[in-house]
Length: 269
Image (cartoon, rainbow, N blue to C red; front, side, top):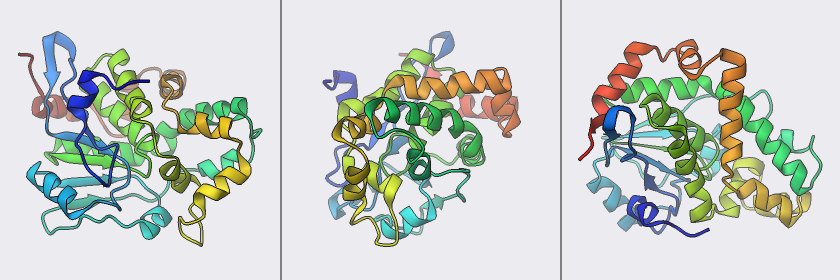
């Protein structure tokens, strides 16, 4: 897959975070669009250089939403800290980690696909507390902000999808924003660290993943197949009846959605 001109316009060129990008600018309902320069998403921020940090400071980012588990944050601490930054983290909500789930599936491409589909189906429920807090804080003015995890694909992808969906962005554009990570090509090391970080830190994460999964299964896990994200929306409709009903269940009611739209939606030029 090749990056599109729109993709290239979204990417913030950083040496230490290849998946750092703006996920604003999409058309929403009624001819409006999401503001640019206020919503960013990324993979881990532990490898940012001094020059990278200067770029992000110039972007005016004030809030970091770090969806990584405590162990991931411990072994890969963010390289960007400053008094003006609000960094938000949450306790893990998964009944099963992706690593433990992976052991229940055949180590094949088909098994990896089933794993990712099921993982995404569980995400809205198991990380609903974090997603709700992100939407509420953005609605309250915590922008410009960046949402990130280790690879910037799964947890981050779900959070960004919920923000865009709450803003009225059509589903096809939401899915394409997710798929952009595949066009960037998600780092195998970042993906491995999100799954297999252990007592030895992240040093052996990639080798551990390769011990368990053949290359074709790893390729599936690294991919940003829109069907993965869509399985989360299918699960939401099945379990809650609709996306608005799910958002209301986790504390993102109409008043929060209205505040989000008031802050982040502008007339299309």
